[in-house]
Length: 308
Image (cartoon, rainbow, N blue to C red):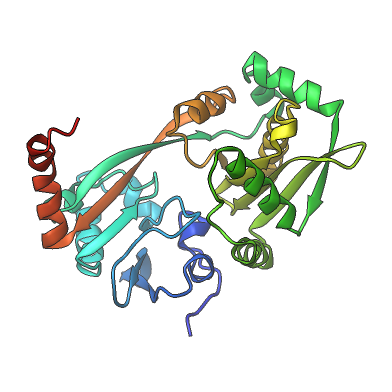
C-alpha cells in the first residue's frame, strides 16, 4: 500500500500520491526523497516498474526542490546533482511534464531526452481581485455582467452533471467523451477528501444547467481543471462567470490561478483575455531505442511516401 498522506514537498496537487493513485491506480507510483544535512533537499515521483506516462487530467509532475537551494544555487550545481539522481530512477520510456518551477532541464537533454516547451496562463498575483477584474478584456467583463443577470452559482460535490455537459460538448463535435462517469466521480471524491477540490455550477431561474467547473487546488496554485458548457447556452457568459468565481476562490486559498493548458488557438485567445501571464513548462520524453529510431526515421519515411 502506498502512503497517501498529504506531502508538503510538492509543487502542485498533481505530485501527491493520492492524486496519482486516483487518476492512474494501475501504475506503481513511487515517492523518492533526497536529504541533505538532515533536510529534505528534493522530492520526485517515479514508477517501480514499467513506463512512466503522464496520467489523465495531470498537467505536470515535476521535481520539488527545496526553495533554499533554488534561491542560492547560482551555478546550478545542486540542481544538476538532484536531476541526475532523478533521471537515474526513471524508466527508459518516460514522458514527464515538468512543473514551471523546474526551469533547469539540461540534464534531461544530456541523458537523451527530447525537451519541448508547453504553455499555460497563470495569474500569479491574487492580492487585489478588484484590480484583476479591471484588467480583464472588455468581452470577458461583458460576459460576466451578462451572466450575473441570467444564472446563479451553486457549489456541489456531485460531478455527474459536469460529465453530462462534457458528453454534450463532445457529441456536438462528433466525438465520444473518453472518460467514464465513475472515473470523474473518483477524481472529485478524492480531491474533496483531501481538501483540494471545488465544484461549481451555473443554473438559470428555470433550473437549466449552463456551465460547470471543477477546480483542483493547494496552497500554491488553483487549477481550472475540468470545465463544460451546454452548447445550447454557450453564449450566456456562464463559463466566464465561473472562472471569475474560481479566481476569487483562489485568492483566498492559493497563491496563483492556472488556466491549465492554453495550446489550442481558440482556447488560448479566450484565456488571454483574463490578463494572466504566459507560463512555460517543459515536456521531457525518452522513447527508448526503438522509439528514438522511429522518431529519427519519421521525416525520411514521410519523404519516401510523399507525405506532406
